[in-house]
Length: 208
Image 1 (cartoon, rainbow, N blue to C red):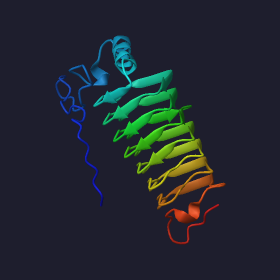
Image 2 (image 1 turned 90 degrees about the horizontal axis):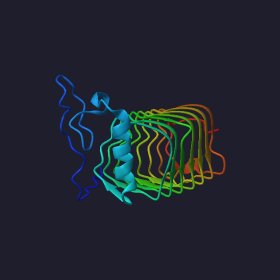
Image 3 (image 1 turned 90 degrees about the vertical axis):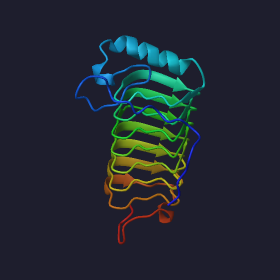
């Protein structure tokens, strides 16, 4: 096993100040997202932080709802987006390193021209989403549920889709070398113009 170590502080691990709440504090607040009373003020402060510069480090917005926005030319390092809900969000020419989107819900989202590495989407759901002309390397999609999802002209080298359930999902002209698809449930999944023969599947698994 290869372990990658970054010289980053990582996001805070302080628990929410509300008694009996086990969730983590959000960046700049003493409570988790669920216990922030003024969500509008919170959203403004977070987007103000994101828009204040190109490089964002150690941001924790776990549980946040992000809707109807375009995020362009941002570089995220060691950020926590776990359990976020993203609706009609577009990431363009962004950069993610060692970030966490586990157990999040994506719908009508687009990731385009974006570089993602050592990042976790494990246990998330993707509905009507597109990943276009992006590099998504050494990234964890284990246990995801995808419906009507397109990966197009995207490098997925050494990424994992183990135990995932895929419906109407297309990998078009993608690099799948050393990607893992063990124990996946696939219904109407197409690997057109890609190289699934260089990926890992269960023995006797049929590749459509």
